[in-house]
Image 1 (cartoon, helix red, strand yellow):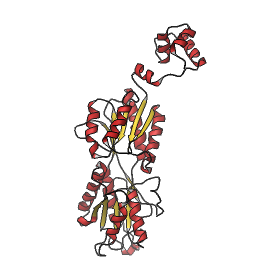
Image 2: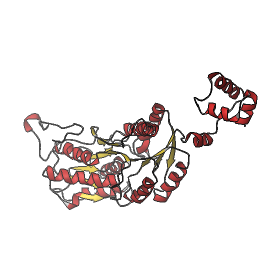
Image 3: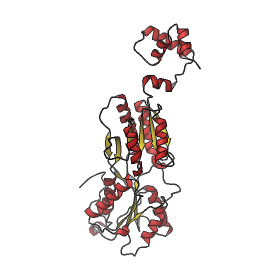
Image 4: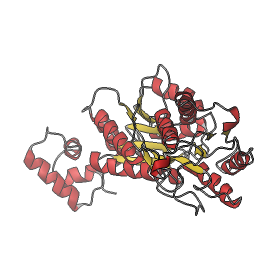
Length: 362
């Protein structure tokens, strides 16, 4: 391995001068700088990134910690991270906390913040991450949270308007004639699941729908519970059976649809099903109709988080990063007009107005 001392000896300068040249210092005369660079290239010198980080007090890298890099949900988000890195000229180090525990996240962040990266982006949806986030914030190390906030802690943050997204989905179903709309909610240890359930309840109230407790059921184990919950909805008496089921994510919706098809119930002719996330990659082994869903701009979030944080780290941006992104309705094949009410008979059963906007708050 070629050293700075060897380059200095061949170039006829001091090791300090070589160090200044390799670290792009302006305190070296141009002709000396050119000579040192030529010698370094001829000798095949490769800089030590860790050592340069100590000298420059920076690594030109950003760490990204997510719960599971292999989850299809993260496909567009990761793509955004990568293209954001190209735009910002920052390197990205990915870490996958498969255990989802605070200790596992701490382990990665301790590693990353020990001279490996200049800042960390943490995809953190779990409410129990709060203690960990407070501790990290107290160190002063730059951190950007995606899909989580902690009260009284002014970290950089980027989030989806989950409440409005679910409200929009409910309004979309309502304007397709549905009045008996049930909801499959995620575990309430996730901030996004709490917000999405609040969006459902707000829609029930504002749209004047029946606030039935048996229309809201929760995932207890994993996404496969969507099958169990849909089975329970389909077993309800015909007069109160839901005409539409809104699910807190697309994977749960895929299991709900599989259950309906297995029972001989047509989707969307007999029951409509809607998801959230608009995943680019279909859930595992799902072969049903494309799922109408609430789309969130995951690529843009990944891209923007890298670009905005790199601007902050370089000093080009001084204010705290805080953004909330709107959602839109991805119209596909699992929602149909309901035959029970809400139809304009003169127009062949099609409602006089169909809402498909992105975030109207009318």
